[in-house]
Image (cartoon, rainbow, N blue to C red; front, side, top):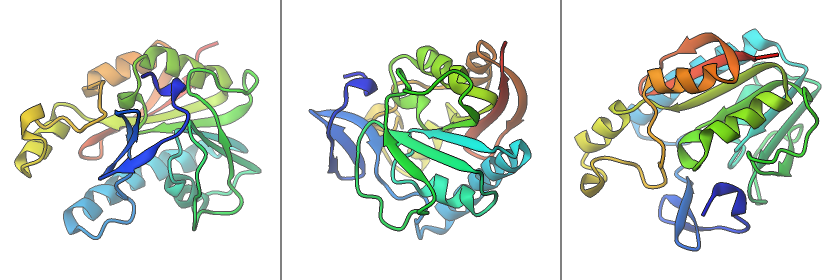
Length: 214
């Protein structure tokens, strides 16, 4: 089922599942106590927050916000006038920054005007959707100044899963990952929709900041 058709979900282990289809992870990577995972997440957050601060946005949209942890963390670095965070499902989000406005929306059909936000964030989403090019086009459409995206770095992501004995039968592929972006592939996708300005490489992710074309 395409991500934009998801209506309601339930948790199953470490994943969000809808009618048997894995549409996202619910493992709390932001609150993990595993020391190696914490070290990796610190590098990811450092890369994303640096690019976020450089963008200095007044109006922010995060697409695919999940539990709202990233939005809350970024608000500690820079508080814009507006921070909207959307996902395909409505849910309780305890402990999030009350200044973040949560809405329900699809990456394929964002209910916002062209150029509505200075910065559009989309982290750890594109690998879960069937049509990333279509989704990226929507991100760029509603962005006035910047788009910031991230995905796992393949095949390193899967190699690290195999190294820790996870998902052996699927050659290390995390359930729900239906796209597998090398760094070159993500840059190529981004370049079709934005002028790529910055690329950060925190292991094992790729993070890109770009300016919408046109």
